[in-house]
Amino acid sequence: MSELNHLSADGRAQMVDVSDKDTTVRRAVARAVVRISPQTAQLVADGNAPKGDVVAVARIAGIQAAKRTHELIPLCHQLPLSFVGVEVAIEPAAGTIELTAEARTSAQTGVEMEALTAASVAALTVYDMVKGVERGAVLERVELLEKSGGRSGHWMRSQP
Image (cartoon, rainbow, N blue to C red; front, side, top):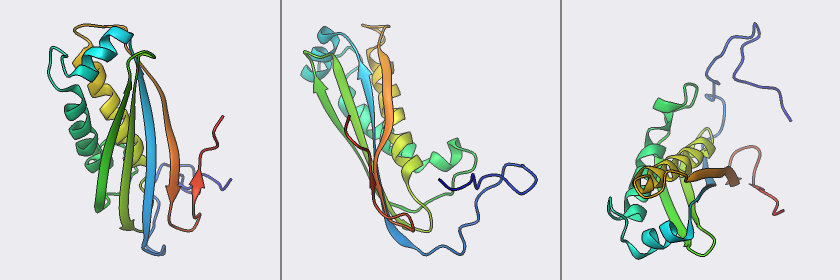
C-alpha cells in the first residue's frame, strides 16, 4: 500500500493535488445492508410501510448524497458525476435490505467515496422510514465492492 497522501510532510491534513493525474473514466460500486425483522422487510417489499415507498425514497436519497459527498467528507474533491444509481434487493425471509450504489465519472480522481456515501445514506434512509415499526434495525456491511479507472486500474472485493 502507498503512504497516506492526505497528510502534508509536516503531518497536517490536506486535499490531495490531482492536477497532474490523467482524466479517465472511473467507476465504483458499494453496498450497505440493513437488517430488520422478516415482518418489516415484507412490509417494505409490499410497499406498505407507514411512511410510504421506502425503496423509492432510499434510491433518491442515495443519489442526492453521492452528489453532495464533497460537502460531507472534508477532503473529497467535487466530481462531475456522469451517473449514480442505487439498486435495492429485499430478502424478507432473511430480514435484509441490500442497497447497492454505483457511481461513474470522467475525472482525475475516483468515485469510491461517492458510491460509499450513496449506499450509506440510502441505508440510513431505510432506517428512518422503518423506525416507526422497528427501532432495532441494524446497518451493517458498508463496503466497497469494485472500482475501476485511474492509475490503479480495476479492483474487486474477493468473495468470502
